[in-house]
Length: 256
Image (tube, rainbow, N blue to C red; front, side, top):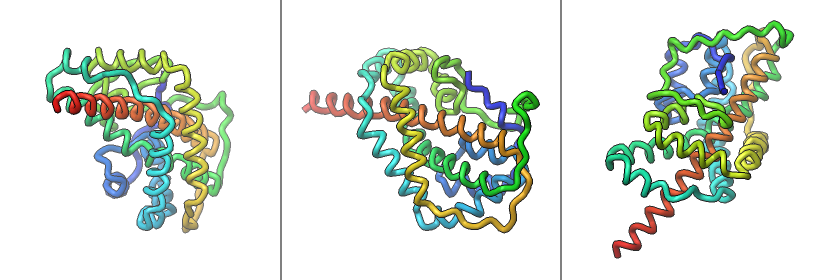
């Protein structure tokens, strides 16, 4: 199960966190931002290093290429629209499709940020804590989670995307079953991680004003975990979205 033990109480300035999420175009902080924000000073310094790349749209361009690449390689899910129409109201179905669309658009940005954060971490002064000394310090009391939670087992919940879908438990279980029966899901997710790393190599990180001491081992493992989860979310959201679009197109054809 995906338990974000690497995310502690948010230490970042609320103003900085607000600037970052608004610049991304998000109303919530993705895992990578929450990881950085839970270590004092990290998010502020990281944002200084990448803000110019945001202003020049390099990060957005890389995220768009990542999104399009995954889109081209993924097969759509089965006809979920008929399932939604039979079990949920039109408004509930609209909300489900909205959740999918939000993460389809935003998660590639978080994935690129995660790979950039790995490079940023390497520049900091560091100390390594032995694995046996790591203690879970997750404190989600100040972190707004979306809607509800569900154990997605093999795809390791809760990520905010899967937590959001859990507002509709029957549909969340259907999505989980579809993923578990998609034989190349893990392959697509691994490919997405590698593609995000490749695309981020062309993005320049500004030199930080100063480096500071950081537990490199903990941060590196946390960010790697975040990157892997982003890849799974991207693949899931893409599968669902493509399925919605194809079957919506089919319904329009029938009505002609």
